[in-house]
Length: 496
Image (cartoon, rainbow, N blue to C red; front, side, top):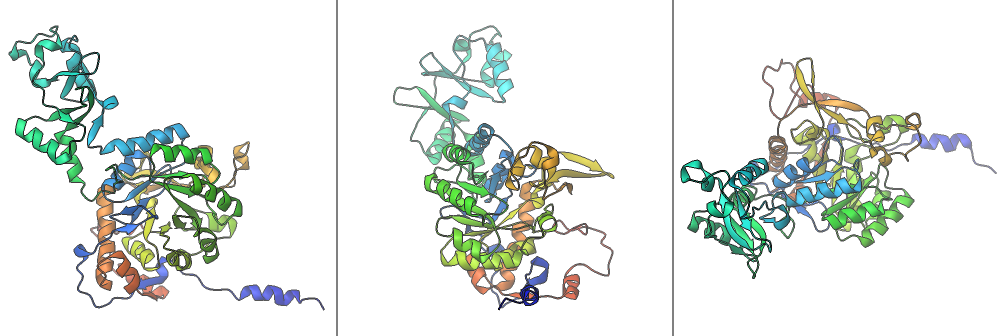
């Protein structure tokens, strides 16, 4: 006897409900935790920890090296986008890694030779934006140091005089194993601003500057690798094995397998192979279900969650597919936490309250795109509309991103533009200022949420927090209402 088609289809109408950020709130609890005391340190992958649980998205209008440097200095992580060739990607990774180097490497040190004229060296230093340079011979042995004070006219130095006549030949140098504290004390004791680093044969191997050491100290909460370099993530396609190798060799701390639907068996097979080769951690995404997590946790160092929640993503409209983000996070986290695999919530976050709700649902960190797209450090161009400044922002499934190569995340590249099936739009987001100020508001709001729950750190918050369901009236009640806002707050805009 055959099955009843009517019953088969009607059973599909017995569907579960899924929730997103506006559908829930944190339930307040007894607390002795002040927001400023809440510790936000977390893991984003098996071996990589951050002091703030925030990542900038791998989008070509959000994260390049400038954003990644700013994010890491503030304790977060920037993930470089895929819309660049491997050579450019390697340069971007290296730019981040060298940004806060304690010692300037030999190949990056501007030097002078004793036979150069004072005028030539003065021009060289001005062009390079430096105030002094080591003077070396043909074997790279340090003979002296030349600075702006050495070549001022009142010292009797002529423009055509050789550097050997103007340089300071009593050079204070440091050995290659010098620590930051020792280098700083050396420069204080001798009242100098820079010291050449030399090997046992007095050959130049680098340079340490007081400015560099003090700058390093200014970012004491930065996300750093064991060697002191800033952390950086790199997006690679699930089938881009060579690109993954290049990013790994360049020093990327985390490789992000960047795919719109990672619960694809071919994607999983390829991601597993990349993980087997890479020395960096490998985060796989995006996923949105318990079943996807179960198929990935045996090899992935982290899981990234988000099927269509982004402000410029049209996946749910175009494909009819997706998962509201709070439910997606909770489903994936149920599986991932049992295997000690960190979870990153990617997309849909408009306010700091959304970010801390994502942590309550089970995420270890959050990834944001539009939130950072309007900052100075984002690569999008500034446009002016109706007297207000905005920055360009587009989804990686938009036609523009597909033209530049980023669309491979959604659809294999075809011959012509008419073959694209975009799952994102191009838009503009209000100009916001610096990443530092935006992170201050975002993380401050998250810490306040931890205080309301009485949790002093992220693990405690995930244990203590409870989410409650709110009605549409409750949602409306949660926003400013029955007033006309005259002065906007830095963390809330009625346009949002």
